Length: 616
Figure 1: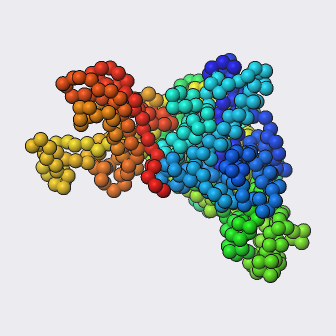
Figure 2 (figure 1 turned 180 degrees about the horizontal axis):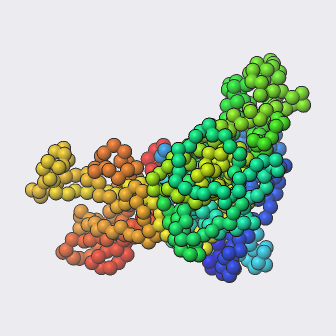
Figure 3 (figure 1 turned 30 degrees about the vertical axis):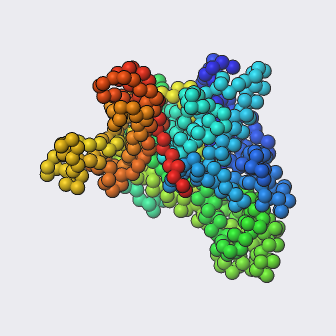
């Protein structure tokens, strides 16, 4: 296998997987083989994002194997092993991320550094992929033969991306000496690269035969009008060929397990190989685990939060079984289904409740008083469709409102298509909600294998990392500088005297503005001089703000974003003041910096650090 082959890891909140392509045939994407294990009724092209570590902290297993092994452990042992599930969301919810950031095991046994937890998972994928590639090519495949692509939500902060990169280095996918071997791909961008070349046969066409479907060409995209939230209409489905042409605009809504990411792209050339971002990536924690949380809240309401906490702590493996059972039924929730969904309650829960409350679970369910939630004598919690839909509603509402907020932006008039992708996009309830609210304004397209769109697009991104030629900056970035003080313009409390001259401190020198279009390779150049002649290192504080109307780094909404370190490394005997020219690039998925000593022409090591390593 020659240098330049690509392997992409779609590291999801609930499910993960990998795919790859060879340099001699980059358009042919090979999916991973089927994983061992699996759940009835759930496609297993991916494996659950579940990590199991031994009581010593050593790696044991990942995915279905980890979940099933943990299930089979004796109850007394489950409280010794470390079981991690849905741990990716830590990087979204944690306000301050550092190398010391901890992730608590789902069974609350212990906590480990986030970098270590992610490194265990990435190392598993690396070894699994290398074995499979070696089997297929009949020659040993080594890590240095592969360019790795790791997917992350577009709404992740730079600190989360850096933590993921450092975990990849710890897992052996690359190193800081060869950073180009590991690429960070934004999930909705990867999906966009996949969607831009869809053909008719790759669009989802199966629909219940008794529904009235509106033909695609009868809906003409046009200016977005205010939505009628109570609008009732037949579900629209589009069976069209994506006509890639310059100027075409489309939105990708990536609905995953943890987050929903939205991006809007415009095709830049005839062959559709280059895209321009029209709206900075946006989204929020509106993934399918929101439905899981609603189900957990329902259980708390029925059985009491004190009992559920007791059950989770005492019998964590049984609780995992309960949520796996709900996951399978959740996928069958549909607006076209009439019969109820039955969720098997583990016998251990029934027995534990009897001992804890002195009552049967049937009594608790009847006392709850919801006619749509009933007890089946076969040991099932029976949810009518109304009850199941109510679990989805808060999450669906948040997704719809966020799409709406983007579509009404004045710069986005005339969106041609809305692509719905991601694992959660398989939900018929979500599909119907999106079509109902937006089908009159944009052409809604749901590709086949929506859960694999990101994974396949990530491989395409690894083959051509420059496909997204223009991105929108999510924030305003800059540093604090001293400028000449101007009476009447600058606040008096910002006035400082230096060498007999009045300066204004804390002025926000902006590199890039929020929502500014930044081309791939576009550079921002600044020069800095060390304060002392023999200084070996310069550390600059880089600030950020959500808007571009801030003047000083002390203004409300401005926060410390990163540190930029310049390792001067050497000194030389010159009388002139040393000048370091720093070049920063903001047009890629990660912010980068390089530097050169102007006098000598020598390269200076420059690096951004986005992680906050103060004590947590």
